[in-house]
Image (tube, rainbow, N blue to C red):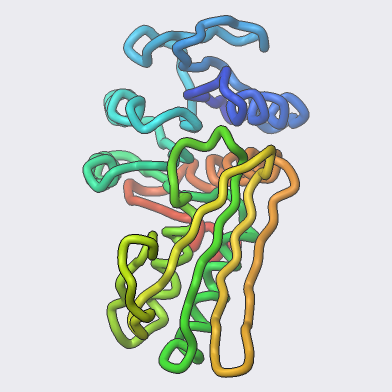
Length: 252
């Protein structure tokens, strides 16, 4: 039985993760971290990792970027693998993960969906074939409560496209401030926020008289929770390193 600690356990994704784990017989949640310390799911909830003394096998973080340092400190101190699912991380946050990954296994992905990981692989391959002759635009859509834009997934997809190109592209996030035609060596990234859209991402390769669109539409948050659980189980027993969805997909 794999024992989980969930950071952000009383948030939307934390509650979804709790629900998904409750339906399994190979893992359980033994503690949670959240600023809301209400315990409604049968496990203790601590306002801060420093207050927790419950033994666990892995931490899954679905909280906010400001919680990351404390989560990583706890993982390193207790030698517990950590799955980081938080988006909107800064370069400094990513450096903290890299340092922690020298001591314990850390899994990070801007999107925990296997489908999105496959989309990134397809975008990388498409860029290698089409990149010199096609303009690349990425459109992402999310619900009106999402605070970061563009999404971490959109940036992940842009990075995947960039890996397939034979030049270093410029990421362009807005066009209203300049009046000039599009450069060939750029990737446009646009964000839409509205309603209850769970998450939609389109990678468009726009050429002369044709457009090829690679898409992923998420119908519920459950797929992200399931992905996080699978990532956590994948991480158990791994040596210290920084892992991502490409590593998981390759192992599968």
